[in-house]
Length: 523
Image (tube, rainbow, N blue to C red; front, side, top):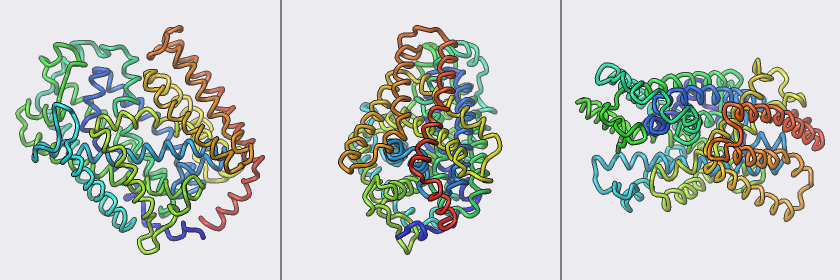
């Protein structure tokens, strides 16, 4: 039975924009500018701008995919269509685990700030939640599930209200710090890039910047529940990313200027805060702003977690449709029009992150490094769909340039990340590949399902090689910027190999006509 027909198309442009902003403006605005400044100094501004440019390219890729196939759980379904079960399995599980970690990330952030009002929730000396704090965080995660359980319409209304409220506080913070306690000399006292420009590039994936921007993915996850997806999805993505990029850059600017110059005696890496913007507000004698930021620290992460809880349940729904999870989780609650079993599963997986890791920083460290791989595969899939004739008149102008450029930048971001972090992400992907191969032989899938995604294996090996000899924790054999030029060229050439791999798979599989027929019946 086609369960997707029970999903209710209730989301328009404003609800979608609020959904995307709700995922983007979460705990990252409270911690991201501080973490990035510690790594890169004033060059952190550059990090936010580069990340916004790259993620906008990637978002346009997903906007076209959602126009071609507006499908709930699409992030995991698209690689299945273009490259088969190997790529789709690895991509789906990496997306799923990353998204499942977001609810405990945001809930632990809320509880950490709540410790200001109710001491005993957070142990400052150990930098982790106490037992009471973990229980409180669990209760908050239950709240996220309950709101989503009662349907898309309630979720859309709730999320829109929370997004509106939490957007105001960062704007107030920007205005207040520009008018009070802004130290221009901070931009030159230790140089614009005290740790080199490479530190600013490395910070994009590891300091919370990319983690912040990727909230846009929730729009793609829920594309099967959108009214007029051809218009509303790309418009909502571009609007939300433009607004959030301006907001984050301004927050970074005011943070750098708000730090008291005497705190920079040991450089930017030596600045330490419990709650960065709230602490700075107190230092500037803006008690009202400090309390406002602390209160918003409970609202902003809650809004992001609501958005991710909704998006992740749709991803599980898509995984069940693809056969990566039992069909039990691919059932839609007919009354509320949401995948309620998937919501419950994600809640339980989230607890597996919360209980052993116990803090915002520990959980987000795991989420950051693996996120970029899933977006690189989408850049390939969108061009495969064009090559086999699925896109038709649903294409976005300039995609022949946008998709390969996004793939090249995704490859560069992985290369620019410290080698130790890259190793962790690659090990995770390697485990996913081994896991698929086991199920492949048990279920006696055809060899085309491996060959269709073989580019992923080669891509991972390529990244291992270039990162190990590069200048970001590697051996540094070739100096910068020449090594980055080489990586960009390799990424450009490899992109077209990956596209060819997908076109070969779809033609070999013969699923183009099947997808076209689905467009005529389901969409």
